[in-house]
Length: 76
Image 1 (tube, helix red, strand yellow):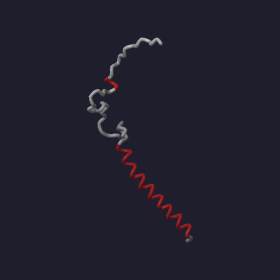
Image 2 (cartoon, rainbow, N blue to C red):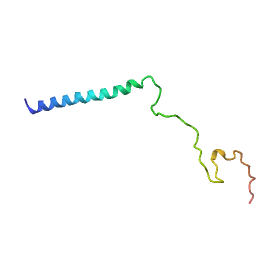
Image 3 (cartoon, rainbow, N blue to C red):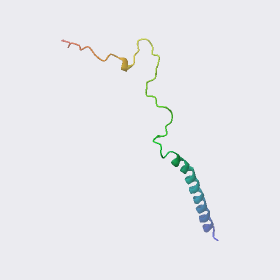
Image 4 (cartoon, rainbow, N blue to C red):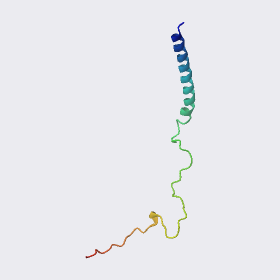
């Protein structure tokens, strides 16, 4: 047998073993989450902003006054 034939057979066997391991590793992950609508992030979603102790005089933009007093135009 020539060395080319031996190399091709060994590469074919390695390819089959590699495909077998890839198929068995991914099969458990695909079957487990198929009925769930979870995107896989995990944990509890908390959309509230963090409570940070700000220095005196500093306020969050959401706590700022919403109504501004209109200024009269300046005449020069």
